[in-house]
Length: 289
Image (tube, rainbow, N blue to C red):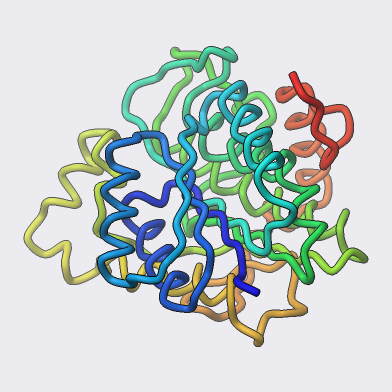
């Protein structure tokens, strides 16, 4: 039976390379993307490379909770189980803005998008044999200390890099809580740093990020998206991590995350805040809106 793998933000960058690699392994791909035309182009490229690939597209804005809940309903209606969820979609944004849920955009997409999509798909994951959740975080988490008040900053207090770093810290805290809750279910979840990847990821970010990416010597310390996808692919598929959960990886090796990412008070505080901000009463038990 084909492994069914859901990948968010799969139309470009490391998300696309992850999808392409899983297609080569025979996975049934379920791509969650915001832009329909770009998603269709990505599907065509995958099928061109692997003619027998099975690829489904679902359109969703992962910064908007209503959109995530709608795609959750569609996936639960269409599938009986999901083997792998790769939470990959994310960004760094130079301008401060709130979503329609009155949540700062970086936090809404980079953390609550992971949290709520996983919640919506948990019944399908638990119906699979040894399901895996892979959360794309970043080394940038080391720049952040957990700040409850900073999760949803007002414009006057907004710093794009600080917001991004905090959201990536949240990815690891979320991973650890998820591993704790589902430790006896067969589900594993791990987070990763993909490397400093030369993609279009920073195009919406602050001017200094765009400047850094365009520097001639940036190629000396940045890797391409294919290389950046390697750890995501490893965590989604390798037998070496079949029993590993709640850990942080870089270059396909387990690493120690920051002290803030291992702090139990931070883990529990973020979980409680995430439940509150997404109006989730019981995680993993989605309710139709």
